[in-house]
Image 1: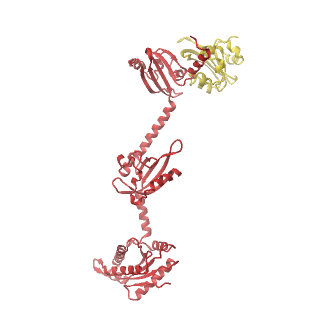
Image 2: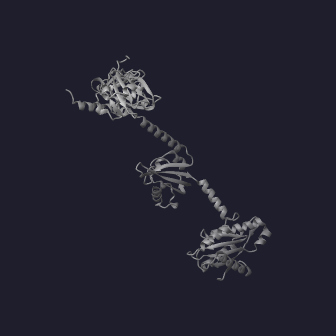
Image 3: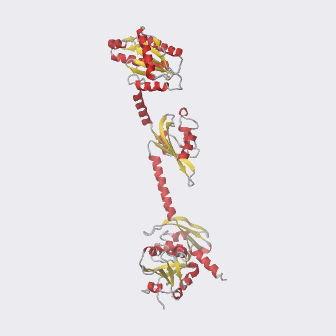
Length: 126
Length: 417
């Protein structure tokens, strides 16, 4: 089963997926507990960041893995919005090279985990 | 050459979590490398999320960064050194510090630090500094200064000039007991005060203090220990207030309460208190003399009450000159005066009585209508061990009565009871 970054039912579908199924997705997925600790880190995200799932799982994502997200545009929204589904063009410094990315932030009272979805975008494009 | 995958991942991980922002860029502003913290700090400030050009990415902090980078000629060195920038968004107000290094090959390295908390602390310190300076410079009638652990004044401020006319050269580095007039001051007083303050945190003293011109004023001083972060005392702050006006009022009140308004002699109540004190066990037995002006009623009748008052005042002045401060002169009532002679023997007491009698007899009172000669009669009683003040005074009174009956202008000694 393959879904896109813009999939309307994304949070429900992701919640039902195993780690192996997450690894088949074409975009990066970071699944976090409600306090920001990484629970799952899929293959596409590992390929982007060059950090393995084993290194990242169990760490605080915004503070200890991807400090570039630790501001009001991303981390504060996950912390303060109980229902969150927003898409944002952003820049990751993957291996220190500024890389334009499209992010989707997902959090819902009905799902146990919150998700950050990551996909490269063409600079200036959509 | 490929690094070990684990080592490469560890290095990547390490670079991701460096807690300062780093951006490497070319002379034309093109960003080559950046770390996550740079993005975290800058992206909220950039309108279109374009992180390809360092000059536009850093423009919210330094609008003319391109000009400043291109005007910097050396091939290596500091283009900007810890430039403080207010990079506030309304959501997250921040203060950032930006340093730009010129490195090799026409490359620049921007280093960004989030100094929001430090800047907040500095603003607080600056606000406190201004507040304290305002206090130092504008308080009236107070001096506020700090001293080191030995009590040496470690800084001058304008309150010291207003307070006592002191300049920095007069006082800085000197122990603050230089304000204490030596005749009112024990050399160990300063050390005792500081060790007391160290033990209990704060102490208060009052006393006469010097102004720079050598005049004195009465000061109340509160000394408070200044602890350092370990809790050890590293100095003291002294807040001194000029209380001269209050001190003079207190002295006036005390004088009004203890003296006779006409003559300035002690009044009966304070005379009795002094006599009670002199009769306490342990002190040498005092003697008392009760004095009565001979024919005082006829002086009043003949010359008027104003003249009678003048006679009483003249007696007090003459007796004070004769006896000195050690012998309190008490107006016991009407034209009766009491003298308390400290622990002298009977012969000395009798001689004192005689000197009072002869001196007053030989000193005419000057009046508009001419001179009046006045004589006095005196009764002397030597205090016996354990004798009550009233009993002693009664015996002196009885001796005075004998002197009057014996023809006046004489001293009579009371027999022991």
